[in-house]
Amino acid sequence: PVPVTPPLPTGQTLTAAPIYTPVADPQGASGRVKGPAIGLILIGIAGILLTLGGILAKPSMMEFFLEAARNANLQIPAEQLDQIQAEQSKGVGLRDYLNLGLSLVLYGIVIAGALKMMRLENWGLALAAAIIAMLPCSCCCCVGIPIGIWAVIVLNRPEVKTAFR
Image 1 (tube, rainbow, N blue to C red):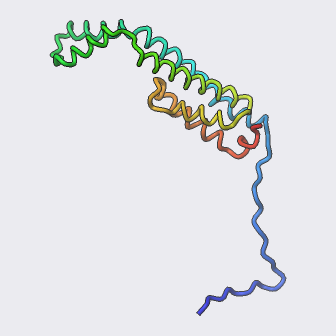
Image 2 (tube, rainbow, N blue to C red):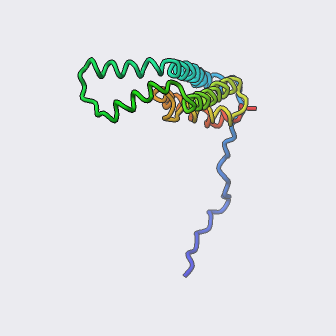
Image 3 (cartoon, helix red, strand yellow):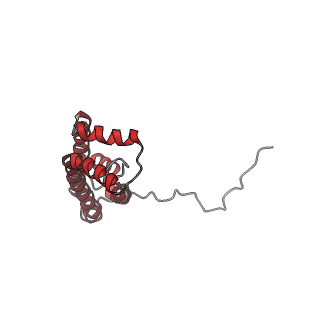
């Protein structure tokens, strides 16, 4: 047997629910994206500075680790001590410069995307900046994760998304 739906009472018709279409409000959207965009800019600047500082300080950091191990009379296994000494003697190498270049590119994308977000331009780049800020490989991930999540949530609001050009 086929189930039969009861007929509608006389005089009534079915109507569709109203469809919500967000209206572009650039002023409201601009106010909503300002906080996360500023946060992303700060993360990008801090990331660049920390990356440059890390590559400049690498030789002295290795010396500090060796000296701290000697002063604390730590029983460091010989192979680990050899690795630290080998890293110190190598100094800054190709791998370090490749990491520096990649970090500068990624943090540059974060800053560029945040600036586009503030101007309500290029929604895709703004979203990419928020996602890159959340990557755990960055030196600012403790701050980047919550700010990136905040930016993704704000960017995906319908009224913000429609305000981008």
